[in-house]
Image (cartoon, rainbow, N blue to C red):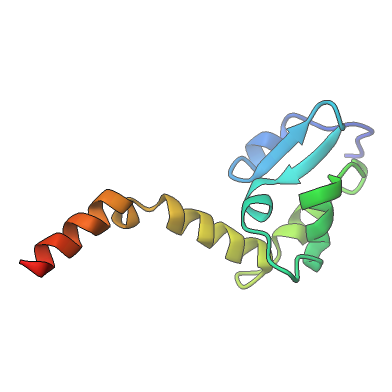
Length: 102
């Protein structure tokens, strides 16, 4: 289906990374925004980070942006998941180091 504006159903399909700015009428990638790598041209990465994506008739660009398992988007996703991983939480890491020092 062709859309001329942002479709809120896309939040369900891309719930883990999609962000939308009402004021700019543009979509962004949370992962790539937080963990932008130099080569984020892949899959329109820079569009999803700085300019915002608003070509609503080209919804397939969302999938192009995600790319394959080793894509820049997925590297950013892994960096985000790693940051949020409880095993790497600072208190747990310090506690483990303290236990190892004993």
